[in-house]
Length: 362
Image 1: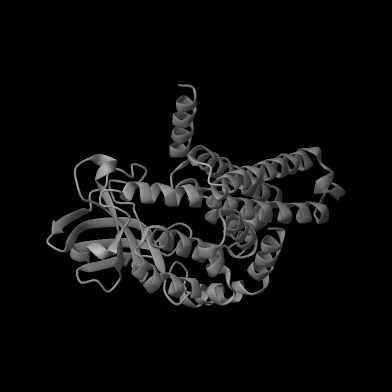
Image 2: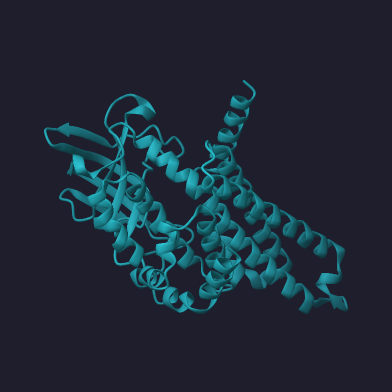
């Protein structure tokens, strides 16, 4: 596992940044996805363990958040196909996704269904040999440029029990979309479904079993969001340690001031605690321990909140220079905010943890 982390960190610092820099900010960078495939990282996403997924994400985040995001989105979008798709569907997409020759996306969120994932409005109307999808998806990473979407739609009015998942190719008739601009450049957009036809063979899992597909996917990927956060936090801490040893004020290095050194000590402790929570959740997932929902929620919640504090402290000790466009910490300050929202906001993670705690006491 240490080898995966170290090798990925090296690639994140030495190989992927130039490819990321040549991409258009905020848009899908296909050469970067292809490079991830050529170095075998995407194959490990689909064929490796949860622990290895977390090692990959932490290592890449330390050196190239753009590469980390591209890898994570490929896994998130492709995992429902891998885990619940029919054999022919897996054969069609997983090899291409693993090589970086095609790009996947996870299409769950909607204008009125962000944190409340069971409240989907995208309708899947049944026909003799399939379904017609009508409605909108919003804040979908890799949209509208992905090649295949794992789409979650309503097939009955029975809340979470009335959702079905489908694999929907980008070229499907009636499917359109547009790009959205965010605070931190990110490939994300809107998808509009105007009677998009999908065959029964495109279903992922069972009819009305789509919510379980979504939650199983998130149980795997939420700890890895924590790993992404740990990688960014570690990069911020490393930068702060180096800077405070070099920068002098009032005749001595900043690191000699207790107000500074104790802040960094607290940050280092929180990062290590976050890393252990992430590793515990991933290890439970790999061991087949179910449910893993509480451990996954704890890992994501603690790690993303800790990373926000770590980057903020690093910016503070650097002062104004950390706010200059192009500075590592200016970049991390923008990037670290979103993980506290996507794949379940911090408030949702607290609700999951509380719900599981009360279940345990019954």
